[in-house]
Length: 161
Length: 299
Image 1 (cartoon, rainbow over the protein chains, first blue to last red):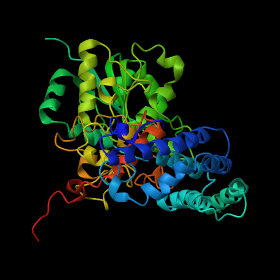
Image 2: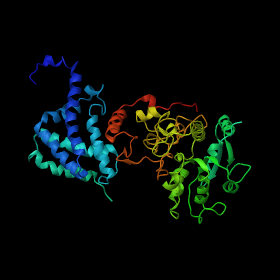
Image 3: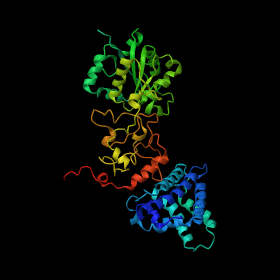
């Protein structure tokens, strides 16, 4: 960043504030990607495949962003308990997931289910795989798994007669 | 003495609900109405003349108020061996202002759902453009099931004094239908913080999330001009069923249509993305004052 550690505190009043800003920053990058995908004139199934690919590309390009989310945000809830609780700092991304799921269900591409169970199928798969990538345990290149993961997410959500 | 405008109340295919509503008007307002207008005919009230005598006379009508839907088909419904449309047309030709009282008169309402007679419709539609274009004033639609009695009286008094009334795209007076039912609901704090009631009949919670309340997408002044001067459906705990809108009645009116737990319809004029952003954050906070019972009665 070409900036001394001390200088950072000219911009952020505490470590907690810096941590909150970082999570908002990293989440907004992913939220902007999903918003773009949501605005595409393609099926909800295709949206899942496109977003999964873009998400994994981000994981490869900027692993520190997803690492920060997994290893700092999810593991240190006490840091974020004041002013960043619940969806407060990740609201933009959660909104886009809501839009993806709601539109898919309204077009009968996705089946009816509780929002949180659907949300966990979507984010659980993506976050879990990003974690495996960060641990360097995958046998193939991350992008080679993209369509398989997207297919699994789609199958967990898809409409059934 | 100044001559009072003549009012005739005509009933088409109706449940009589708007007549009941009118008779529940505030007594002093009703007295003022009867002192200011000459109610020459109402089928449920004793009047000095009957409908056919008026139709066959030269008498002019200032305000023709119509309750109920219109049909030209006498197989299912007729009045004095005439179709509703036939009598309506004769009355309209003698009238200055036409007021459709209630959803059925405005656009057919529940009667228009009757599948064996596709001829049932509202006043404006039944008269057609040819007849309505000759009127001094557009047909005034007072939608609602029923209409609040004050909406009827207020409309009559405004037109009496000003000769006209401003209408919206559905021909409803803007003074009465410019705001949402949501406006003035005492449960708005629960809406803001997305607090849902556990079941029907509670003092707490917003009825929009689970119980099908149409308050945020229905235009009416139900929570501004209170019913019987004291209350409204939503304040009491009965969801708004959107009876002032032209898609009324709908199926499953006491259920909120959802997709993956997210309301399929969002408040009027608000994008889904904006609505979900706000509610997603609001839902995060658990405000105990709003989660608790308002009153804990002694057992």
